[in-house]
Image (cartoon, rainbow, N blue to C red; front, side, top):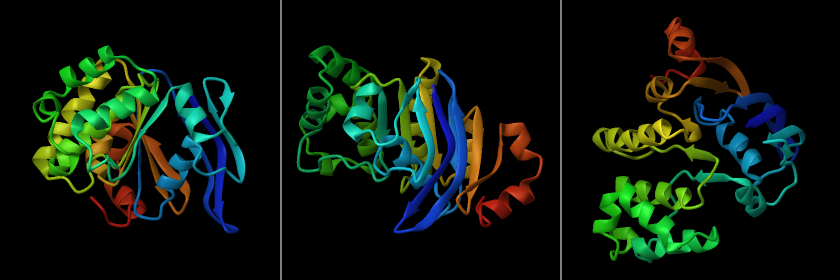
Length: 233
């Protein structure tokens, strides 16, 4: 479904991503972990059209995305849940969802499906988004992304700033999406959670893929993994 081929990203002539390859098949859940500055966000920006790779190709279902506008990429079936959630905090939950539905040309049926999947959002539909907890705002961001019925759901740091119990709840929701066959790319700093949840995980450090594998492969040498992650668990 998604192929990154020797992707390089540079800002003002300084290269921060050095030839990253990544493949993602339909129904697969792939993770990307690494310390701050590893290049994870830059890779995502290249996929979503927010930055143009200096070389290499991003290919989604046969279409080369290099140079394509972000809104056109979204229409192809990619949806991003951004780091920090970025909901419209002065609007109500319902208004946030309706904006997402209108942008994606979806009907009231899609709205109803979203509220069915996220009952807390139905209960708080008329409340302003800034009155939601961090976990509830994350649910709102995921629900808004799903309104477009994406073929690929990309999540950037879905556990950032959340309490452990809330992180468990978010990953229960993501597990439900996995069972439904949703293809996901999950970018996290929470290495243990990502490796446990994803079918495969790539470890980025210094703008390069340093390791890749499933739970068993990445668990064989925890000392090496910690070294790549800068001492993170």
